[in-house]
Length: 393
View 1 (cartoon, one colour):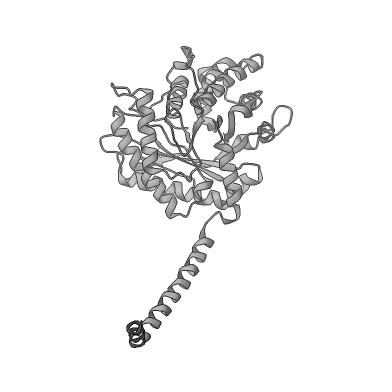
View 2 (view 1 turned 90 degrees about the vertical axis):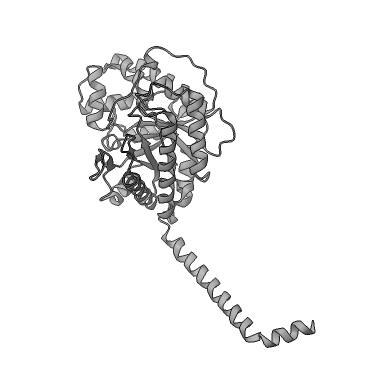
């Protein structure tokens, strides 16, 4: 004890200086933490964002992607000989949204801007019809893709200019989440680091703007099916893309509990001769998720990406049969929910009910797949490929 007292007396000045240094730096740490906290884009909306994300990523439910642009839906209508008029687009969307029991299987609907502002034939806003079914309206906010100069045909998404004002307007009109699609291609020269980084940073900037305005951002880094690559190549590319995207979200101070991820499943390329099985797809997809995606993100809402209606359902079912996932693994399907409904409707009011029944069959099937309880009961029509090379929407 005497030795310690003598040591303290000898080094008293140094010890006091060290204490002052530590105390000062601790104060600086808390000061910087306070400043950083104020820079978080969604500070005023955190609890609302958390609640919205959890409501969308709920067991047995998923997202209906009804955000086809006017040009894209024209291609769908051409196949059933239906004119692409505003009235026809409204009638078709109304068919989907008025389907009885919609909210049992669907938690959110992604809308095109035209639909957000439309009213049904009886004058009811389509947004109100969606809400009355217990479903949350969302909005597509990107403006499509353009070629990325300096790459071998890779693309980057546009629409960031003026996004803040648009998001504030969409929120006032009833939207509570948004979607932005980034596109990654696999080829001999792709993806490049430039493409991966540009798309990741744009997704992160979009997510920050959305959260600042009260919208849950759906982050969609789609790795396209185009190509003859096998599932191992897709897994390696997907892992890199998700890793860079998540890091960009972190750097932009995104509130992870208030976002949803909409990735493509890890599959072999559309032209690959050695097609992966649903079990291989499920294992590869979940493995990459576990390596890259934090469990703070409440839901992974897979896109169908050109899979047939039945393929998309079977693969989702296989994914959910792998145990101990920290996320809700669900769906955000467009073509894979609507193909049969379009064929049943054929643009006729007389087929309104038939179109709804066909749609609900697919919605119920994917609801069961989200729970890992789907029993395959396919038809030839539901197994038809929905793949389109160089797909745009």
